[in-house]
Length: 135
Image 1: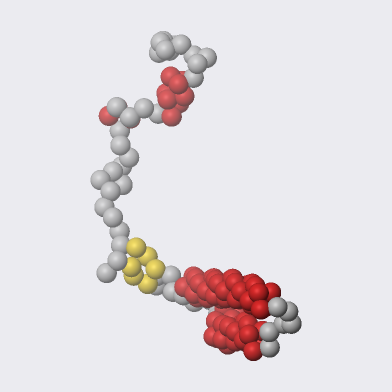
Image 2 (image 1 turned 135 degrees about the vertical axis):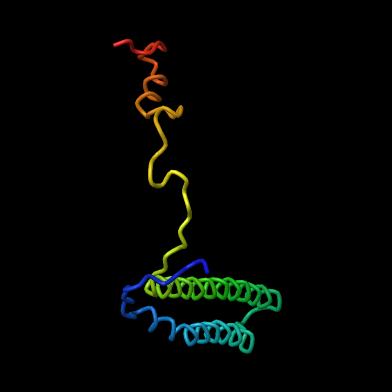
């Protein structure tokens, strides 16, 4: 198993995320019905004008309804993802399995060819010569 529950971890109390998540299906359905109802009302009782003007206005309303539907679905989906992320973050803590590192107990030797950060800045700096210090 890759993850083990952290012993002794206390889960955080549930909060607003569950309340919002439970209301989202109603908000989704209500928004879609509102958009569809307004669009349907315009199609059932079209505005006055010539046939060309009415067709143009209905097409504009349909395009607006499609845009509002996409925005509504995106907003509800984004809020749902945010609620799920908060629920996961408040859940039990997990610890990843250990990974053996060869030099975990004793760091690599400085004599093994590993330069210190000071050596790297000394060589890379244009203000110092490339010759090593002979102090």
